[in-house]
Length: 159
Image 1 (cartoon, rainbow, N blue to C red):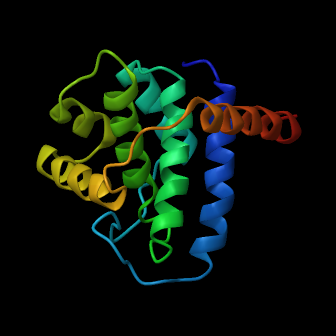
Image 2 (cartoon, one colour):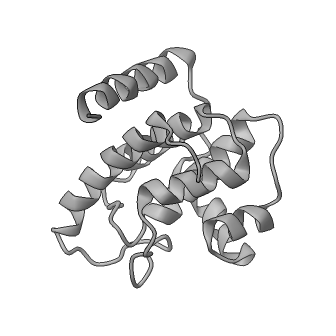
């Protein structure tokens, strides 16, 4: 069994809180990221799965969270709920890996890890990049603020 990662646990707790709020709104699906039904796997287990099989740096998870925040700032009509969070998260992490890490896999591998097919991951990646206006750079100061807040949140939330 994989050892617990505090950053992954904190990110999943934050996203779980957001999902709890947005799921109660019962909004219509509004993007190609939205599935008909929510995946059975929890956000935390999904993050652990991605971490285990992609071997990406921990920084990629922080960067992915920054990307998701930017996405929400740029496109307030995109609602992250349980029907889309896994796909948005997967793509945010994959793009962070490709932008941040020196080594990365092909999309067919990431598709298998994420539980979708390669055609879908390619389409979702293109859409995600367009939503982001291809603005992927994160300055060091912004990264450090997010990392610090995640660590502080984790200290408060963890028993």
